[in-house]
Structures are given as C-alpha cells and as structure tokens.
Length: 286
Figure 1: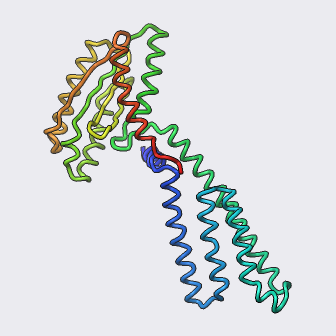
Figure 2 (figure 1 turned 135 degrees about the vertical axis):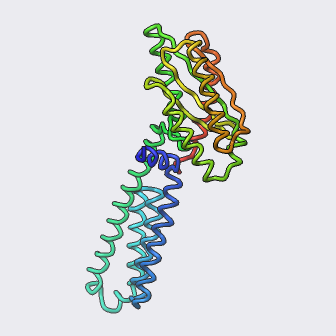
Figure 3 (figure 1 turned 120 degrees about the horizontal axis):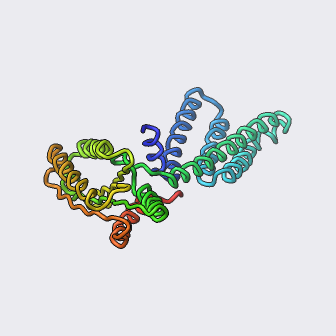
C-alpha cells in the first residue's frame, strides 16, 4: 500500500511540479556549493564557472537531453570567454587542460541530467496513465471504476450473468468542516472500512467531485434485491461512521443499478465518475 501511495502522489504531482521541486532543490545545493567556494577564496572565474551549472540544470529540466547539451555548449563558450584575457597573456597551452576538463564536466552533467529528466517525465506519464488508487481513501479511484465496470459489462454479456453497482453520494460540507488532520484521518479510516466490508469478489471505489464524496461498489453476480440489501446496510454503516467521527450532519444518498436492465442509469452515474477522473488527471506535464 505504501508503494501504491507513493506512485499515486508522484502521478498527481505531474512532471511540471516535480520539475519545479527539483529546480529549487538543485539551485539550493548549488548556492551552498558556491558559498563554500567564496568562503575558501577560490578564484572568481572558477566560482562563476561553477554557477554555469545552474543554466544547464534548468535547461535539462525543461528541455531534457537537448536542453542539457545546448546548455553545456553555451556554458563551455562562456567559460572560454571568461578565460580569454588569461589565454591571450600566457597562451592556450596553459589553460587547455582546464578548459577541456570543464567542458567534459558540463557535457556529462547536461547529458546524464537530460536523460534522467526525460526518464522521469516518461515515468510520471506512465504512473498517471495507470494510476488506480484514490489518494484520499486508499481504495480504488474513478479510473479503476470506469475500467472495471466496462470489464464487468463485457463479462455479463458474454456469460449472460447479472451484476449490480451501488452508488452513494456523501455531502462533503460536514466532512470539509473538520480540521485538515481529522478530515484526512476520517477519509483514510472510511476507505479501510469500505474495503473490509465487502466480499472478496466485490470492488469499491471513491471519488471526490468537490461537493460530494462518491462511493461506488461493483457487486458481481448480484441481482437488484441482493444489491438493495447491501445498499441499505452500507448506508447505515456510513451514517454511523460519520456521526462517530464528528461529521454526523452529512447527508448520504444512494442508488442501485443492475445490469442487464439499468444501462441508461448506469451511464448517467458513470458520466459523473468520468468527470471526476478527468479532473484528477488534468494536471499538464509541463
């Protein structure tokens, strides 16, 4: 579960936010390194040469490998210009090794860092694409529900079986009124309760649309009557749970759909979950 949580957090962060975070951390480290060089009275040109890693770093984060290589070439050119007066005074031979060493360092940093930046971007894209864990509760999310309902519909059509989906909507006002820490704990405990309260073959998902906490439970091989019994019991348990945790004023509304028979109602509910999924995965990469 911890690995899933970390994957979900990275996916939600997206490459843009991850890039910003890395930029701040990297520039902070570089600032500390430059401060140490200044304290040690290192030659000013070498201090500036160290600072030239900053634009390379920013370019590779924004433009991956091409940005890193372009930044390295530019930094090398600037360093040669910085040493131009000394080269004119004593000749190229005295500085050739130093300049080549600096150039190698710049290009290695730009190439390796640019490759790593591109790999991070692709990894976060994949995490976002396959993310099926809800951050708030730890159960399945809207993306999982949409995919799993499609699979259940296909199975129902192929084997002529029946399944139901329980939909619940919890008014978010009473939950949102709780302090942040209590609200987070409540939703985590709610997720654990939902997961523990279903059969092995059932699947439960949670989604938040800004005004309601939505809960959907897929009930394979369950007709309407059995699903109704499950729904009533679940509503009672959730109301008791919310009251116990200081959110007793929240309204809980439910609906049951059974397939075959309630396809239109199912589509209406899934449209709401599609909107949740789109909102959860709408953060741009860059």
